[in-house]
Length: 121
Image (cartoon, rainbow, N blue to C red; front, side, top):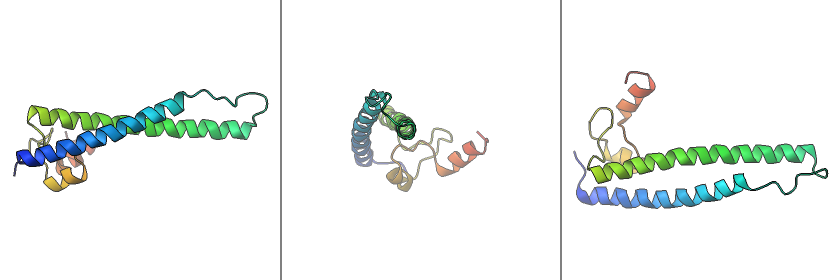
């Protein structure tokens, strides 16, 4: 069953809130990764440098995952603008409301996603 306009607006508000929080988090993580290492020098122990490098690597991984999620949110918001929100990008079937409540940025049904992951799309 297609989503009502009220339901779509509820999802839009939620997506915009998610986008705002994610954007703030990305800005903070990006600043952290770009921060110069003030402690670099002869006095820093190699183990400390390794820990700093590991922390920076983790921050980069988190930032990459957040950026991917931001792209999904932007895609969902674009689908709202296009009037296709709640419709699977692959099969054209309606995405169940429960799936959208769990993942408002979902752009496929579970069945289509499974087929995609198995290489059937």
